[in-house]
Image (tube, rainbow, N blue to C red; front, side):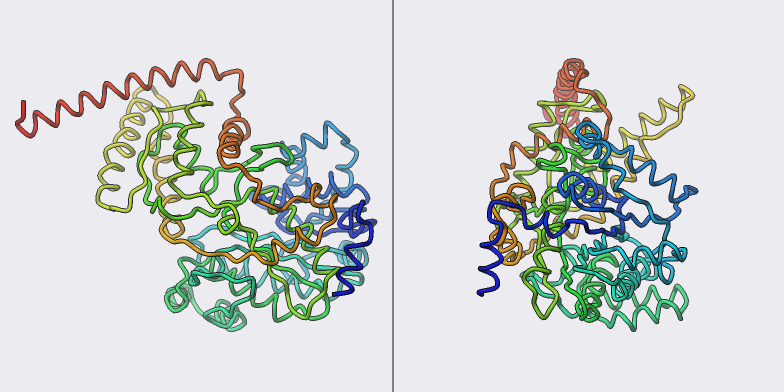
Length: 500
């Protein structure tokens, strides 16, 4: 306790977190992902005395690592740095490597440099697809984590490893403590199995393990196994596991509302705003645990300092969530999404926004066929007649699959305990509480969802606010059409039932 008090008393007016990163070198895996980009940006901007940020990048989809690095730096997440001090971007150094290969397939010079220079490692790389095969998910989420741990063991001056997991790694629990739970199968045994047996046998094993462990998909299963490996194999250096829930648009940094993908809930909110989603399978009386990406990033950065400064004999886990501190229910999120979709509509609106959460699957199927499938089919038919490429059926199918994979999380609720997450803020200096804010109790959901919808409009749809007057006029026309269609539908229903 004395050590803790002494640490807190020191440098009260300054930043202990910034001092921790002074002259250090960081290695980040998964730097081209949503969280990874925001993490690179925050470290670059808020830790000015950090020497180098190494970003491990593999070749992907015909692009070599150097090309992907240049594309990364073009991202809007770095606009603030470009306007304030673009020279800071020189600290970001790409390293060609692949986590699926031993020692990441590094060339000798890069291998030696990382082992000699790196002081903190952030392992963010993972596949977040829920429908991956067991072999792919194990290779990317579990075995890759083991390779990172083995690599870290040889780094000369490592201060901390921070592993980014998910709050849903223990989806079978209803109360999730900040501890590492034993997975339903041995990670080492499953990794060996995936190297030995054929795909059909692996598929059968995957179903058996998920059934025993009550895991909804291979993503949560392999992330649980990765956590176990972190807890079992990181004895020689401090390590932390950060478990964010559903990661959403930025609250404050680098700018309010920043988001650059349509994965998960972002895509659903976008389509609600465009009027293309009319029904969602969801229990709207449950808590939806969403956490802004800048809260996640600040937690990651501070967690490395925290586990190094206040050492313990085990891996420290941080449940980076909002539900137990500042909760919002699905029905509230839905109402706010619709409200702000109509306040700041996009020019890409397709129909007047309006949808329902429902748990009745038959009713959902009826609504899907009438209000999702049929309109998409009709629009594609018109596009074909005009000689254009049909796209609406493809979009309809894509979001149907997205909603389907997320159903488990929309029909269940968890109580995530956040003692370590709270102590992270408590142990910070006053300056660090501002620089690396991770307290979600001050988050105002109405204001945040508005920023989120504006962010989707600006960063995902690339729709300038200059189009807002025209978009509002378009929304008004759709409102009139929507009401007319309701009158027609009601009249047809009365005719069909024989009423007058």
